[in-house]
Image 1 (cartoon, helix red, strand yellow):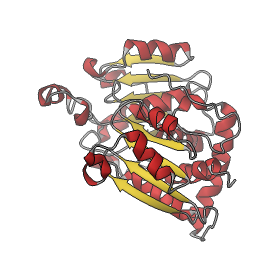
Image 2 (cartoon, one colour; image 1 turned 30 degrees about the vertical axis):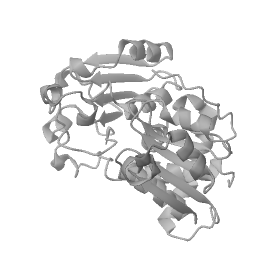
Image 3 (cartoon, helix red, strand yellow; image 1 turned 90 degrees about the vertical axis):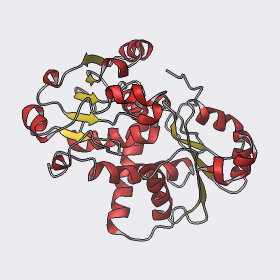
Image 4 (cartoon, one colour; image 1 turned 135 degrees about the vertical axis):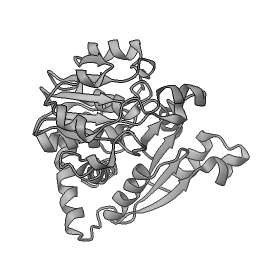
Length: 323
């Protein structure tokens, strides 16, 4: 696990880089969730907000994205701000000419008040934060490292349903070893007491032993399973993920494990409880059958994606000192 040399929030978000869930305390999450509820009302009422009027946020995405990119863009604009939007800069900007990440960051911090960065290489968000002198960096996913804003929206989604983030039983399924969204969510859940996560994956995609021991030291109870029949009944949440083709060194290695665990309507009926919520960070490829979408417990195309925008609205407003 990457141990990012990050600055703790300590109740004050203004001008802080957002690199890892390790920065957050229970108090910090309480503050964020309070403001997220307010942002939800702003978006739901479709009333114009001038909270970020005059502010510009750069979205710098070296890796493909639709939901994260789109929700950050929408979050800024919901609050009256503007965005500079750069996708695939390694092909369509000075990066293609050989410009370093550090120089790119210094250029865009001259134009904006914050930079949202996605990059395929683990640890790049920390590198960017060290390079930036004047504006905060928000990690929108760094390889198989972390995806802190996804983790935050996932925690908020669970909290919104169950009104707590302790004494939970969850199931995380799919690509565990490469799952930056799973890692961030588990870092957040490890702040709370008595949480148990069942990890359902092929042996090849299990959590690394280093990370497994680290999460245990943090107080999170992890139980590895390799068959659907071992899923605990009536869990508080399921967190299904895709097998990430882009993380494999060869197509043969990917083909060996693809389609291992498919979430079906039958599986939901067998093991999900009345109050189980079914989550997915998206994109969904073939790991959840589409007929599951109509189940009201499936929140991945409903509240979960909307919460992404609300969390990001609150986070940006907080780090820019507007609330």
